[in-house]
Amino acid sequence: MTRRLLLALLPLALLAALVTVIIRSGPAESVRGEDYPPVERLTFQRVTLEPGFIVVNVLNDGPDAVSIAQVQVDEAYWTFTADNGVDLGHLGRTTLRIPYPWVGGEAHLVKVLSSTGTAFEREIPVAVETPTPNARFFGVFTLIGLYVGVIPVIIGLLWFPFLQRLSVRGMDFLLALTVGLLAFLLVDGANEGFESAELLPESFQGVVLFALAAGGAYLLLEGIGAWLRSRRRTAGEGQAGWVLAVLVAVGIGLHNFGEGLAIGSAFSLGEAALGTLLIVGFTLHNTTEGLAIVAPLAREQQRVSVADLAKLGLIGGVPTIAGAWLGGFVYSPVWSVLFLAIGVGAIAQVIGQIVRHMAREGSVARMLATGPVLAGLFAGFAVMYVTGMLVG
Image (cartoon, rainbow, N blue to C red; front, side):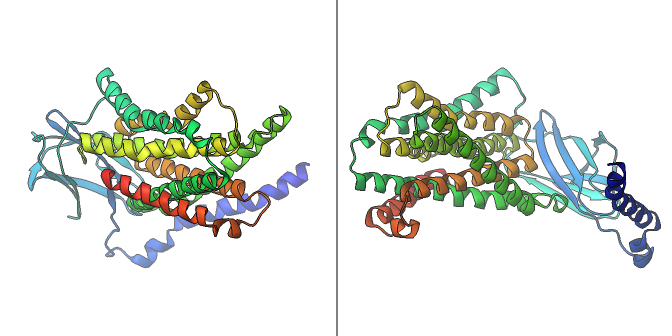
C-alpha cells in the first residue's frame, strides 16, 4: 500500500518541482526583455453608490502587476482610498472609495488610470443608491419575488382541473406546449448565460464555467429523477407523472432563481428601473410555467391534493425571492453565470424527461412529427415569445 502511494505521488512531486523551476527562472520574462510593456487588464467587478461616495471593486485580470495611480469621475480627477492597496498582482482585488457628489438619475463615468497611463472605465447609466440589507429592501425584494415568481406559477397550477378533462390528443398538444415553453426558457437562459460569461474576467474562463455548470446540473437532476422514481416504486405507487412534475418544478425553480438574480442585481447595479410594466411582463411570462408543471400530472390522470399543488408552486416560484435577495445584496458576476448555467442544465434535463415520457415505448421522432405535438411546440414558442416581449 505504501509503495503504491509513493508511485502515485512521485509524478506529482516532479510536476511541482518543474513548476517551481519555471516560476523562479521566469523564461517568459527573459524573452520579453525589460523594455517590453506590461500586459494590464483591470476589470470592474462592481460599482455601488452610497450617499456622497462611489465605491468601485476592481480585479487585476492580467498576467502582470497593475498599480492604480489616479481616478477620474466625469473627466475630473478625484481623491480615493483603496482598502487593499493600489498595487495588484494577478487576480488581486481592491475596493476604491471615491468621495463624489453623484446625482440620482444621471449618468456618470468612472475611469481608473494605472501608473503606465492605461485607462479603464465603467459607465453608470442611471445613478441610484445601492440598497443595503435592511428590513425595507428585504420586504421590497420579497414582494417583487411573490409578484413575479410565486403567484404567477400558482395561478398557472389552477388549470389542473381543466387539463384532466382533455382527450389524449389534447394532452399530447399540452405536453408539447410544455416542451415549447421550456425550450424557449432554455434558449433564453443560454443566451443570457453566455452574455454574462463573456463579461467575466478572462482568468475565470466564463464560457467553460457556464458549460461545465450546465452539464453538472443536468447530470445531478438525472440522478435525482432516478432516485425519485425508485422511491415511488418502493412505495408501490408508480406515479411517473408526479416525479416528472417535481422535476419540472425544480427546473423552473432554478430558472426563476436566475430571473430573481437578474432583478436584484438590476437594483443593486442601478442599471435598470424596474417599473410596473416590467413586473407585469414577468408575471404574464411566468404564469405559463405553472401550466408546464401540472401537465404531466394531468396526462396520468392522477389525483393531486391542493397541498401537493401548493408544494409544486412553491418549488417553482420561491427561488425567485431568494435570487432577488442574493442579486440585490451580494451580487457577483461569477455567481450569476453559475446560477444561469444551473437553470439551463436543469431545463434541458426536464425537456428530455418530458419527451421520453410522451414517447413511452414508441419512437421519439415519430411522436414529434404528429400534428398535435407540432402544433403544441409552435404554440409554446409563440406564447413565450409574445409574453417575453413585455419583459424585454
